[in-house]
Length: 187
Image (tube, rainbow, N blue to C red; front, side, top):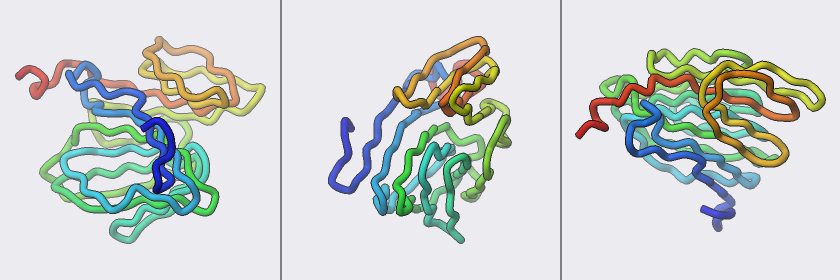
């Protein structure tokens, strides 16, 4: 998409390798939702969706539900399948969503929220590690090596890097990935 649709969702795909070159990564999307807008009820199966809420809030409608606010990281493991929706709060939402091939496709679906995530976020998988930090204006931090997704006032930047300084204001997200070509990509 190139702008908000009629539902108030503006989803921009930043990266979508279909050749296994980034190991388990299927897609990274920059999603912006207007207040009260959602994705609509939809299914997932055999995928893990990692959502970093950059601003605003979303209500995850599945199971007991969960409110996910700016600074939180939500991890949805779809496993054998589920249907759900996410709806933005009164202030809308800006969410970085990363879709990974499921690490456990035969297991039941789960959802967990890591509040105020800062540093390494436990994903319980060996082929992908996630690090995140909010960098305030006028400050800087040193990020670990990996695939950097940098969300700042000038937009989003995605690039492989060897670690180093990042200046704020920004949210830095780093994926360390096992980029060994997966078996599914060999066929």
